[in-house]
Image 1 (cartoon, rainbow, N blue to C red):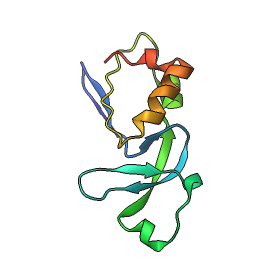
Image 2 (image 1 turned 180 degrees about the vertical axis):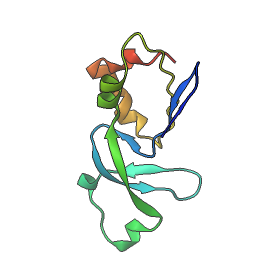
Image 3 (image 1 turned 90 degrees about the vertical axis):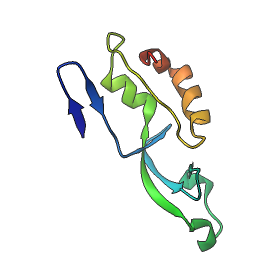
Length: 101
């Protein structure tokens, strides 16, 4: 859903930021979270303790289809370690330039 006013356009998404769309396992044990793409697999039911399946989006593609260089985009990224995959993709595809702060 989105929150709109005369001066602000804020969007909240209940999706996992990732480098491609699909499903990922989300681990939310303790105070940290990380995702495990299904391609990495898992070794048994104990690996699934505390994990849920989340819908992931290709963040670079989302930025590209949603914003232009004329938009002012603020991005706070704390995505459980996946920023180590997402940021290189943003750099490689040039979509990092769509983020102002």
